[in-house]
Image (tube, rainbow, N blue to C red; front, side, top):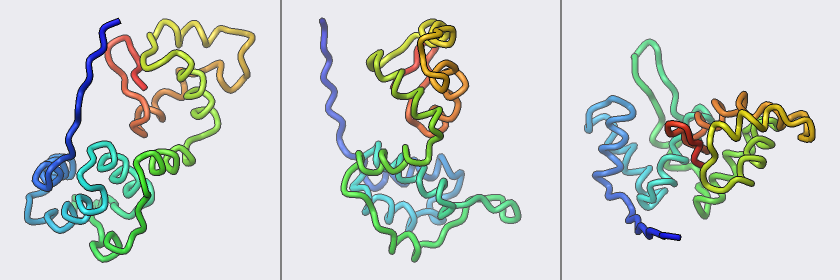
Length: 159
């Protein structure tokens, strides 16, 4: 078995700012204070940055304003937010918002390791021995993908 080890360094403050400029489609001057807060609260850990931003949107701390045609937030509110001790704590908190069906599907998918072929997911749907909630794993995939818990890549689901 070939194993490749990849060491991921934390993102720099500029990396976090650039990422947020791209995602929010706003100029640097409008997000600089926001990105500084995010960097400070996540120490630039890439997964933590993404999960933290997702939780801010989910909890309506960062919201899209149709009248201004851009996202808006309150920097003071962001500064006062309690953060998690670790990325794992944040991920667990994010999982608590998932439906029971999505969590059951994730449990079943986790039995297949880091990657699962679409054909396996399709075959699982027809298994009569599985619990009712886990039979239709395919219907839970969009919510798991939207939450950033799994990633779809050609014919694989990567957890």
